[in-house]
Length: 181
Image 1 (cartoon, rainbow, N blue to C red):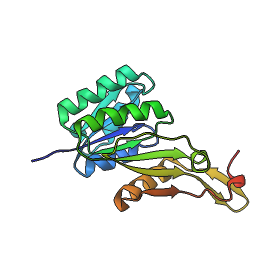
Image 2 (image 1 turned 60 degrees about the vertical axis):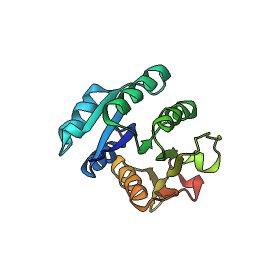
Image 3 (image 1 turned 45 degrees about the vertical axis):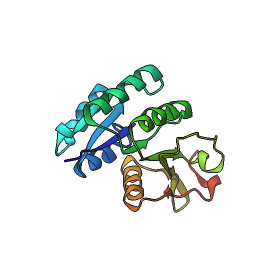
């Protein structure tokens, strides 16, 4: 049986429910996060904790990140799906380089803040990476606005994966001047 392997970067915080959902969908789910307590909490909430692999590393430490991802691939096979909340494009390009060396094709769901919808830097990815963008907006209620909750973010990312959306918005981005300050 071929194992499905997913990587979630930022998967113990606002993307925790995405990590849990991927594990429920039958993925070996490698989760990058910095907090041991959050990793323990994630595993404690999982229906099948043995398919969740904790990767305790800061994605800003490129050498450690590279080694951790290579170890995850060696242990559980090629990664076919990545969900990433990395604002650092050099770190994300490093992830692409590593995964593309071991996977024929794979999908990246890049979770981005609302500002990147209007102005973004170029991201250089390998040709075998299918890039999906998930923009996080805000919620406008009556005369005030608020940022999305972790639950709303996770539901929106999951919906994007289920629908195979090339680009999606969770919440709203317009009118941008109404966003929370």
